[in-house]
Image (cartoon, helix red, strand yellow):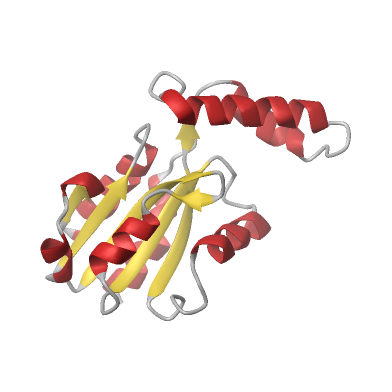
Amino acid sequence: MNGIVVYKSNTGFTKRYADWIAEELGINAVPIRKVSKSELRSKDVIIFGGCLLAGKISGLSKIKKLAGDSKKLIVFTTGLTPMVAKKFVEKVKEDNITKEDEERISFYYFAGGVDYDKLKGIYRFILKRFYKSLKKDIEKKPENEMMMKVLEESADYTNKDYIKPLIDKVKA
C-alpha cells in the first residue's frame, strides 16, 4: 500500500492513534511538521489525525493544502467527548469537512484524553477556561457535568479498537 499517516498531536493521544493505524496498515506515521508536499503527493492514501481544539481539527487546513485536491484523504480527530456522543461527532464533522470535501474526505472521531503534564501554553489555558465556563453554567445545562468531570484531571480514553472502522475502510 502506498500510504502515509500524518498527525498533529499536542499531548500524545493523536500520535498514539496514528502509530496504531500505521502499524496495522504497515505504513509510516509522521508528524505534520516533518512531511513535505512532494512526499504527500506521491502517496495514494493520506491518513491525517489532528487533535480537536475549540471544535476545530488542528492541522487540517495545512494537510489539505499539502495534499492537494487529487488525493483521497482520511481524517481522524481525537477529543475528550465519549465515542457514543453521535450528535457531537456529527457537529465536529460539519464544522471541519465542507460539503465539497465530503466526496474525497472520510472522517473518524476517536476518544482521546487530557494530560495536563504535557499540555502547554495556550492549550492548557483554553481547557482551564473552558472548565470554568462549564462550572458557571452547570445549573442551566446539567449535561455539562460529564465534561466537567473529564476536565478535572488527566485521563486517557484511547482504545485501539476504535480504529477498526478506519482500518477496514482503507483495506476495502
